[in-house]
Length: 138
Image: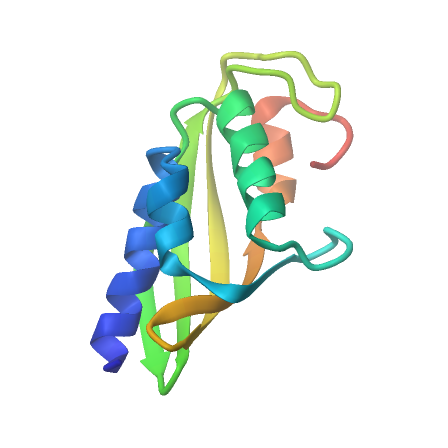
C-alpha cells in the first residue's frame, strides 16, 4: 500500500473506534494485531483492544479522535492528534463528572498486508486527569 493509503487506514481506525463499530474496526486489523499503551501492561490483541475501546466509550460516550498531523514512511504511520469529549461514565472508580476534556495523543502504527498489525499509543493522561478533577492518574 502507498503511504497515503496507510494514513487513510489509520484515520478509518479512529473513525471506527469513535463510532464504536466493532466490525469496521476488526476489518482494519491484521490477524496478528497487537496494541501497546504506554504504562498499560502487556500488549493487547484485537478482542482486548475492543474491550478497552468499549470501556472508554462507556466512560466518555462522545469521545472523538482527530489526527491533526500524520507522517508516513514505508509501513509506518505516526499520528499526533487531539481527543475530546465528556466524562459520562465510571472509569477507574471515578464517577461521571460531566466535565469536558481535550487531550493530545500520539500513535505509531505499522501496516502489513493492507491491515494494521501494530499500534503503540501515548495520551496526555496528566492533562486529561486534571481536566476531569481526578486525583489519581488514569
